[in-house]
Image 1 (cartoon, one colour):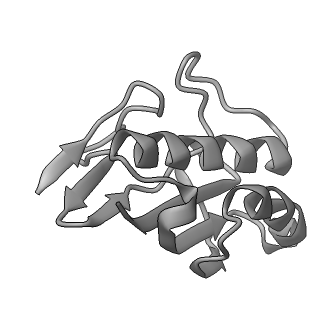
Image 2 (cartoon, rainbow, N blue to C red):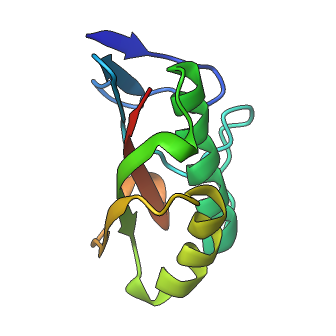
Length: 122
């Protein structure tokens, strides 16, 4: 196993890693919509979905992978009413249409509106 770390995505805020490489697979931790340069989180679901996608992409890139190699995502929404707006942004990044679970949860860390984790090949 090899830990994946990049300054182009937010650092872990707990006892976990941004991602792991195991064989030919890459596993990302859930990515909050935080700008890694400023630590700030935008307000709208569209902007937050954009940052969550960018952060997943940065970890994938650091591991030698990319959006085109994602086979599974799990997406968390604070409000299922944001599903369509979230999908509109998500679809621009995950163009290969990987398998996906998308659920509404009671709360996401830091009060975020969304979070995305991914599994990809290299």
